[in-house]
Amino acid sequence: MNLHNLHEWHVENPRLMRPDRSQYRFKVNMWTGILNGKVIGPFELPEVLNAEIYLDFLQNHLPNLLEDVPLTILRDMWFQQDGCPAHYSRLVRNHLNEEYPDRWIGRGGTISWPARSPDLNPLDFFYWG
Image 1: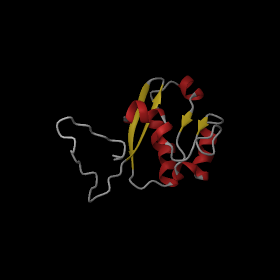
Image 2: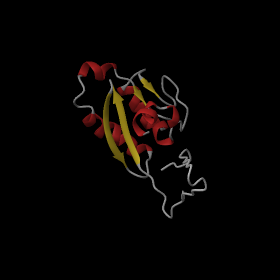
Image 3: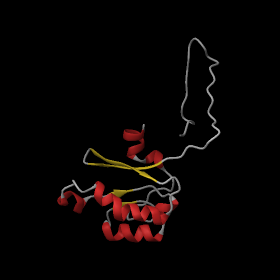
Image 4: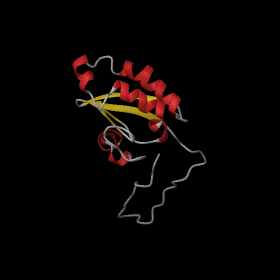
């Protein structure tokens, strides 16, 4: 949980302090999509994400999440992801080139996307926030 951008302002107690450190590091990897105004997912990925696990998600779990989407939409759908290392592997890029030829946005894709840039992702503003 990123508490960096969480600010609190109080009139009655301006010196309010909140602890922002924890003994344990919290980490959750979630995949969620937006397609034609409809939320797809979420799908929880393992805490440690590598290229093989992400490729397995793309090949075996994403099709299940998209099974209710009409074929006409799937054929023209664009896929967007950020540039984290698991998304940038050659295996993943090859798969995306096959499944979404010239229709995926990401590091190394048809349309480049800055590495580790979730702040530019529509999900950051409309879903996670």
